Amino acid sequence: MNPEDIRRWATNHEAAAARERQEARLHPLTPSQAFAAALALLVYDETQNGSPFERVDPVTLREDEEMREAWAKLRARWPRER
Image (cartoon, rainbow, N blue to C red):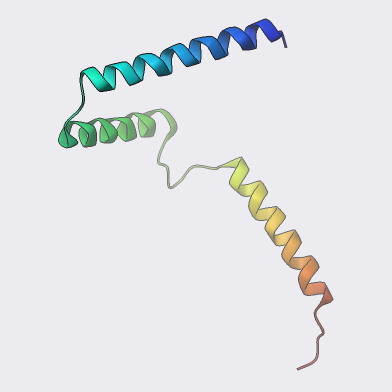
């Protein structure tokens, strides 16, 4: 990966964040506008990626598997007497 590409991306990202802050100061949203915008983003996300409740998330799957493995290691050390 080219370090100059990363620098350019970081510079653009910082400029965009500064512009967003400026716009938010100059043209603040009312609570109802902010809520409507948030709902619109959720609708857009669902049209692009499907229902958030039915998505397969590889990170969550990996973390769940790591948790099961850690739990199995802990359980293996517990005494079996009752």
